[in-house]
Length: 125
Image (cartoon, rainbow, N blue to C red; front, side):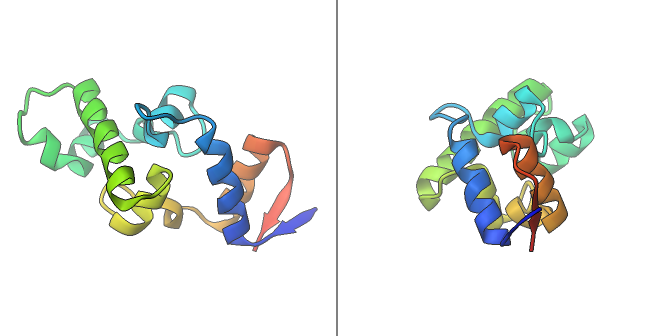
């Protein structure tokens, strides 16, 4: 089995994920829609997404989950622009507000994501 450094695995995943996102879709949105990687917004229950994005949800308690996800997606993209970072995981690596970005994943999990994304079996160190 191939061995790969953690940063190398993250660089590889980032390059693969950049193929899936665009100016209107953060990785959080794409991962939720496609059921890949961390599952994005879908990994959170309704309660949890309101808690993680409470600053959005508290503006209008009538916001639907879809509306919160839409605003959170736009916020992720705006933060990418402001912080000059390529994807939401990089933003959250710094901000740690809705998740912890790459810090959320063990080396073993990153290895599984590399395999799911590229088909390469790797051990991440």
